[in-house]
Length: 179
Picture (cartoon, rainbow, N blue to C red):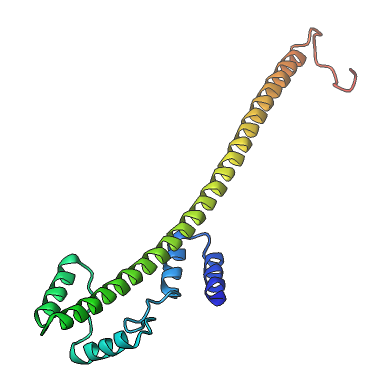
């Protein structure tokens, strides 16, 4: 489990600037595989014997996703029941398979939700960094505009002084070092 977390963290750090790459990388890692369909934690001997007899007699449950597929499987399994006990065993096996399927779907959805949360977090960080950069650029633009206005005012003042100096009230040309 620790290696899964470290692999996820490394994938996020390596691809932090590209959101699509983060999602693709975490999806490709496939760190949380779906549980095996045949795994069961029920240790009751009667249930185990019934489940073994059931699994030997019937083909395994196909991975069903829609309500119609589960209804079809339920109908097929229940129509082949010989008596009430067999029908109960088949129904129990079907319910266990349905529970495993829902649990696997829930795990996948939770994993995808985690990936999306991380992607949103990365996107939020990128958005904040971009806003900060935009704010800095606006400040720099404002400073440059202020400096340009100041330089224009200085240029105007210097041109006025130059015109006044050129229109001196003294007749003739005088050497500038004299004054």
